[in-house]
Length: 310
Image (cartoon, rainbow, N blue to C red):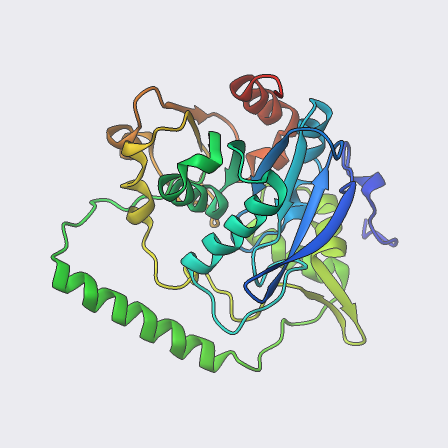
């Protein structure tokens, strides 16, 4: 039966809208921040994946907040309610994340949970700014490519130039593009091709918080210049090779069921780079969006690793 009403949080078991939403300036780019939990509780940072936005945590974040944390998530530039930018890069995302940490955590070491692209970003940020992290949980966001190449320095320069040229050419082609409009159900079905394991009710709900209604129909808020593999010049193995030197308690989770938006990383790819004392777990029976498929089970794992809020 085709739904005849607009979806709401009431259609999503356990779903809860953020308690606070606001924006900060990150070097001229407006970044939207969403918080669940008591405003005076200790902060826990939550980083979403590529093509996602903070409201995809509407069932997962409340469980962490109910355990006593102030859960802070933000829309990456070009995603959700954050500003679109002229150019995107991995480093720009990291600068935005640093601005969010400075605002929400006041330069204290805080626990961080990252999913997919957000998990890979947090590996790199923790390597560069370990003082920001007390613990790091990575949900299916440990990228790898097999084998990791040994590239000469002069070749790395050529690779970077090629990545930059390709990204600038793509940005030029998409400068005036718009996301294709459609009904709530049409956008939900499109999203379903990338999220085949998520329920149609959930996908319809995502449209109402991740898209904007226009005269032509609903359009995803995601910048049209975004593309798979399009985070600017970056390679997956750059994050993986930073992992072994971690001084931050680390808990990585990989999923058994591979999906289009996942990294398809195998545990054997990660073990040689796992930091001392690091924990790695394969989750059976779930796909890339494990925190949406099984929010209670995932929250229990995360909370057990983090311990009680200080």
